[in-house]
Amino acid sequence: MIRFGSALLLTTFAAIAGAAPVDEKVLDDPIGQPYYITGLESATAERLASAHAMTVQQAAELTDAEARSDAWGRLGLLYHSQHLASAAEQAYGEAIRAKDSPRWRYLRATAMGERGEIVDAISDFRRATELDPAQMAAWYRLGASLLVRGDFDEADAAFRQALSLNSDAAIVLAGRGDVAAARGDLPTALERLTQAHALEPDAGQLAYKIAMIYRRMDNVVKAREWLERRGANNAKPQIDDPVLLEVAQMSQSGRFYVKAGEWALERGDLVQALAAFENAVALAPENAAAGLAYANALTESGRAGEALVETRRVLEFADESARAWYALAWFLRNSQSSDDQEEAGRAVRRSLELSEDAKTRSLAGGLAMRQGQFVQAAIDYAALAEQLPEEAYYHYWLGMAQLGAGDCRGLVGLDRAVKLRSSWGEAHVVLARVEAICGAPERALVRTAAVIKARNNEDTRITAAFMQLGTGHADKAEQLALAEMPHPDAQLVLDAIAIDSLPARPFALGSRWWLPPEVAR
Image 1 (tube, rainbow, N blue to C red):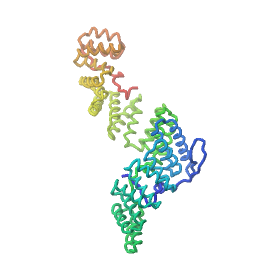
Image 2 (image 1 turned 135 degrees about the vertical axis):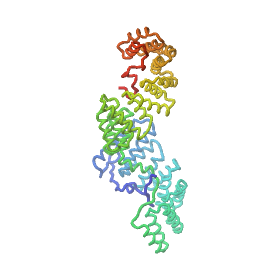
Image 3 (image 1 turned 180 degrees about the vertical axis):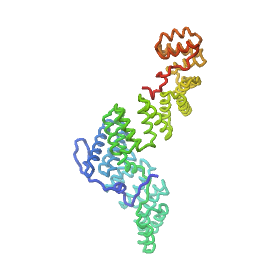
C-alpha cells in the first residue's frame, strides 16, 4: 500500500520528505529557466538547469499535446522533489496549458499549498476531482484546504466524498472529526476521532487530538489517559497517495533523465540521449533501469565496450535483475570469443530463471543455435511455439533446430510456418530442401519450381540440386551442385551422392541459415 502521513493543515511536501524548502529567486534567464536555485549543490543545480533546457527543447519539438504536457509535468516533479515549490508550480502550469489533467492539477495544488496559496490550491483540487472523481487523495486534500480556510460545510462534504471511495481511511475520518471540533461539536468530534484511532492505533497524533477534545470537555482523567497512550509517538494517520510518492521517488530515481533520454533517442539525438542517461546514472548510480538505458545508448553510439562495462557494473548491485542479465547476453551475443559466447549463454539462462518471457527465450534459442546446441534450441523454440502458436517465426526456428539435430520432424514446424506466413520466401527454400531429404520429393518438386521462379540465385539453384537428388536423379543433382561449387551446400549434395545417400541436413553446418536474426552478425 502506498501511503503518506498528513495533518489537519495541508502538509507540505518538504515536511513529508523531512527537509526544509530551498530559497528561490526570480531571474530573467535567456533560456527561459524561471528560477535561479540557491542552497543546492552545484551538481544538482546544473542537473536542474539541464533538465529545464531539455524540457524547453522537447516541448518545442513535440507535436502531441499530451506528450508536451508530460514533458513539463515531469520537470515539475523534478523541481517538486527538490522542494522547489515555485518552480514546480510553474512547470505544472505549463503542463496544464498543454493538456489539462487531474494529475498535474493535483500536483500543482500541493505545490501551491506548500507556498500558502490556499485559495488557488482549492481551485486546482476542485478541478482535479472534476477530472477524476475517483481520486480519493484529491478529495481529502480539498477538504483539508477548505478546513484551513474555514469553509466547514464544504470541507465536510469533500471528506464525505473521500470516505465514499475508502470507508476505512482513518485520516479522512480524522478530518471529519476536525470539522466537528472546529464547529464546537465535541461529542461528534470525539466519536469520529476515536473511530479513526481504532483503524490506526499506532497514529499517536490521533491520540493527542482525542486528549485535546477531552481537555476541552474538562475530562482531565481521560485527557491524561490518552496523552499516556500517545507517549512520544507523534505518527500521523496515513493516506494512499501514489502521485506524491512519485514526487518523493523522483529526487533519487533519475527517472526524469531516463525519460528525457528516451525522447532524445526517439528523435535520433544520441548526443543528448547520452547526456540525459549520464545524468540519470550520476543522480542514481544504483538505479538499474538508468544504468541499462545508458548502456543501450552507448551501444547505439558505437561504444560497445563501454556499454558492456556499464552492464557489468549494474549487475554488481542488481544480480536479481532479469533485464540486466538479458542485456549482458545481448551485448555478448555476437562476440568472436568462445568465452564470451559461453558467458552470453549463461547470462540468458539466468535471465530466464528470474523472469520467463518470449524475448529472452528467443535469444536463448538463438544463442543455442549459434553454438550448435540444436537439442536445447529445439526445447526453447518448442516452448515459444506452444506459447505463441500463431507466430510463424517460432515454428520456423523449431523446425530448423530439429533439423540441425538431424531430426526430420522439423518438417512439421516449417510446414506450419509457411501456412501461417505464405509469402515467406526463405521458409519456402528451406522447406523445399527438407521435403527433398525427408521423404516428400513430389512436394519438393513443385515448391522448388516456385522458389526458382520467384528468385533465381545460388540458394535456389542448390535447392534444385536437393530436389533432383530427392527424386532419384543423382546425375542432374550432381551437375547442378558442381555448377555452384565451392559453395558448402553444393559440397553437401556431392558428398551425399558419393555415398549414395541423402544429405542429413538442408544446409552445411556453419551456414548463415542456422543463425536466427538475434544472433546473426
